[in-house]
Amino acid sequence: MSNSSGQRIPVNRYGLTEVYSPEDAKPTVDVVFVHGLNGDPHNTWTSEKSNVFWPGEILPPILEEEKARVLVYGYDADVTSFTGGTAKDKIHNHAEQLVQVLQGNRRVRKATERPIIWVTHSLGGLVVKRALIHSNDIRGPKTEHLRSIYVSTYGILFLGTPHHGSDVAQWGNRLEWICSVMLPKKVVDTQPQLVDALKTNNETLQNIDRQFVNLMGRFHIFFFHEGKPTNLKGTLRFIVDETSASPSYQDVERGVIQADHSHMCKFENENAPGFDLVAEAILRYAGEAPNTVPQRWTVERKERSTMMQAEAAELYTNSVKNTPQSDSASTFESSSLGREQKALPPMESQARFDQHFSVEEVTDEKEMA
Image 1 (cartoon, helix red, strand yellow):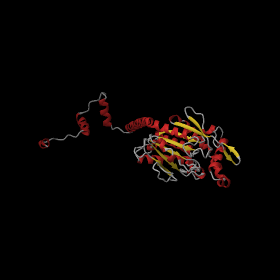
Image 2 (cartoon, rainbow, N blue to C red):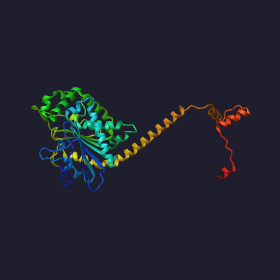
Image 3 (cartoon, rainbow, N blue to C red):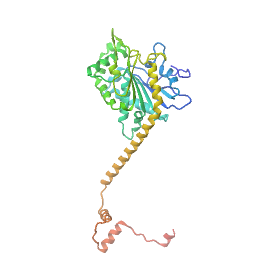
Image 4 (cartoon, rainbow, N blue to C red):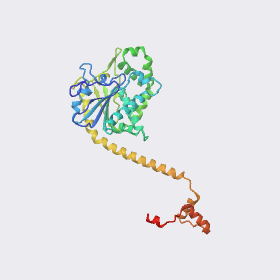
């Protein structure tokens, strides 16, 4: 993989790698690629025929005028990372880490409010959906900086991501097919318990889908489904069929890439089937986002300010209610409200006066001072 200068740059196995950034201008948008199960931040997006790594080689020239920065994200995506360990929701762990890493990368570059466009493949789309749900749920003053990922997201391209299924059994079968395609045959044959663990985790995946539906209207979304079946042990099958990969939601875009599930994200050149469709969507979102996301940040800051004022007012009200009042304060408060007060004897009146005021004798020397 090489950049626009022809220099080969390495791609980190884990975390973010910047594979392209405009040389003579400040980036105006971030395009972030996230792979899926058993994927890799380089190999997932690299053609096996031409060895072309399209996010860093053939996409940047198209985005030159939009001044986009292109990043790929890598994480531990073997099947055990989705099912093993003590944590019940492993996808949430991946999503939380993605939010933290991307926020940190953008913060140190003073680009917190820069628009974001996601490009995802297979189960990587579920990780991104969960990341946006997590980022949106954050409300605490010490973690509100992590909301920047949700606020800044403009568009998402889902390539072969399973979005929903009408029955649990179908979800399980679909996940098993994904494992069969994306995992080495040795793992599938010798460690079936790992595949079963992912299948039983389908309730978590369905919950992600239900929660994300409530956020969809905020983003520009493009669903892509595979146009060619995969040979699974002699049977041709669509791993994530059109119904699941491109559900019919209102005001979303849908398209097909004429490749099977594992190859629909690997474009060998600009003429590869589906490349124009994907590249055009990224190009269009990159051009539109800088005009829209700043308005969202204006609303976000106003909402945060309103929330802080409301919390301050509540704290003040509670503090006043919990502050004990002395008898003398009550007397003066009643007096200030115009209530009739009984006259005090001369000596007692003087004593009350002395409680609240100390009279200092002023000498000539103090006056001169």
